[in-house]
Length: 401
Image (cartoon, rainbow, N blue to C red; front, side, top):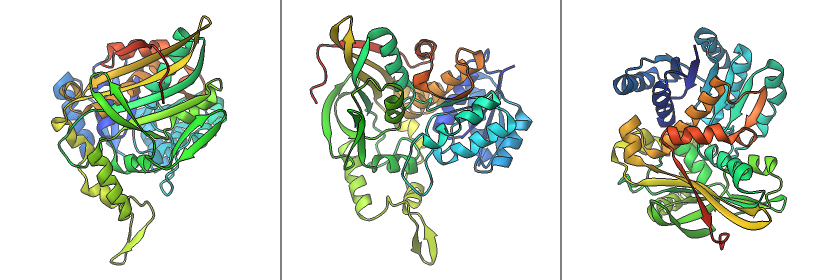
């Protein structure tokens, strides 16, 4: 029996449990928990209708360590898959240590009151998980997650040395709304409005948010403007691949999204500090989140594709070489399979794959691990089998920017 407890009933959680139910030989018992059990029940009904598998549901405040540990004790899962908010990572890790369960997440910890996401808080759990004989895998989504696996795969099989690495994330989907986010608006907007930062020659280079733009022709999507920004896998890649001289992350944004974001920022709606409104403290960004479409509602109306991958330059057998590894995912196909659009799909499927590798013993260990530390081969093989096929392309020269 391989029992798993999934915490978080957003789009990513929905995709993950749908895909787990499609692999019943690995996931023999699935429990989905969230603050609102009704959301879990709705996902469970979809899973039952699509796969015939019955999953269990539970109500949980994941900020409550004792309550989370009690649920883990009751379910007795081999693994807790944390697909809740990044603010809750440490509480869930504490509960796993308390109840004796392995742990996996897709996004690193971020304090509620500061737009600062980094791995230091979770890396500090290394000895406690090691001493408990438990495994914690961090950042097992697509970016972070699959992009780190692509890098590790390139270093293992395609390049003897990596000199530069560029991570390219393109969402070519169109949902018809002038402004909406494809995942949690609060997390998305905190991330996008943060200063850009990339790793170069052993140090961080920082600049204004969304100030560096390049055009790129993405397979399956076409030419799009992409913007230099900071993303969490840069930190772990810089740590575990010190040979790489420069690591950058690029993400595409449409003109309408950027126009609305600029106006909202100018009037203070992206602030994360409390302001008084009619005698009550409110967080402007949280209020904005309540006004925007629920990301899970966008699946039925989103058309187009995503393209996410890495371009690595380096050497192979003494010669310069540039390789591009990427996945193209179709929004409509993702929705037909799981009832969710491709942004959720490209995060939820890798979470399921990582969980499967932990449960089957393909990935094992005691302590806290980032994706770069784990064998990429079984993960890459499962991506091809589970709906995220990847391509490798040799480029004639490094990127010209």
